Image (cartoon, rainbow, N blue to C red; front, side, top):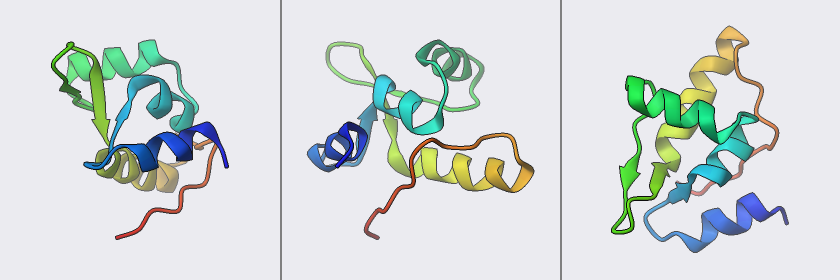
Amino acid sequence: MSKALVAIKKFPKKLITIKVAANLLGLSPSTLRHWDKNGKLPSIRNFSHYRLYRLSDLLKMIRADEKLGRIKPKKKLLVDG
């Protein structure tokens, strides 16, 4: 099992770190920081001010952008519910 999928299972509210999100999308963490600043993909800050991303937001972005051919995720995700 990939590290990304293991990390997803560890977060009960389906929040993932910027590193895992970038890996899933096939992008750099700096791209996600830029998108966060511009509002394209907002993050949630934890108590240590680290960026966390909702898995549901990432999946919506992947689905929308796959149709347009802009994002080709590195990993296929199997997520319950």
